[in-house]
Length: 212
Image (tube, rainbow, N blue to C red; front, top):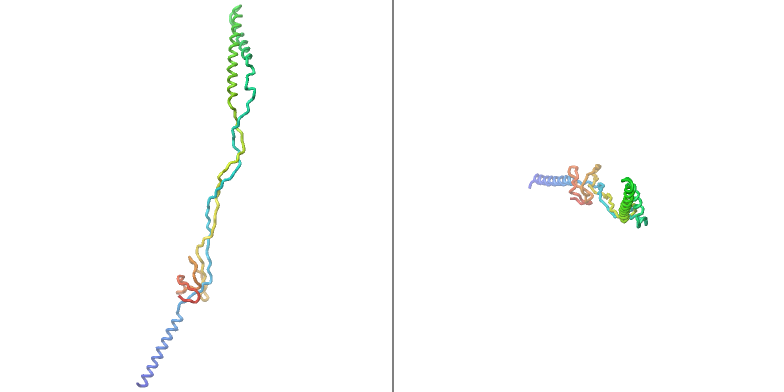
């Protein structure tokens, strides 16, 4: 083998080695880039839920009540059991009317007859009046009075329950001097996120120094 061939072979080997080293170095420099997750904050809102609450409550109310009325003892019996007042009044009226009829002895007879008939009529009228009064007195009499009574009432009111509901998460990440935030539906499960063209790929989140 000539000396020129050996030199050419050596240079070729060295060139291939340098190319391989350069390729390895480029691969190292262009490897996957990750941003550090420096903060995670939950975003919440207040949710209000109304509901009805009812309870039985004892209260005092003024209510109308019908009560009996005490009757006078004088209504039990008649003050004129013999109907003297009615008889006398009827006799006087009847006598006066009879006296207007006829003359002489006929006038006297008419006067007596009028007095007798008037007395009977007056007695009958008094009987009817007192019978009606007794019937009214026998009926129970009542009146309306206001009395205080305790009653149970169902009382209801509306109360509002509140609770906090998570709407999402604000995640702060840093790559070099760049600090940005992203909003996610769920918190990241790690402390580093893969970057592609400067944008975080939240489906690739790793923990510590482990690369995806």
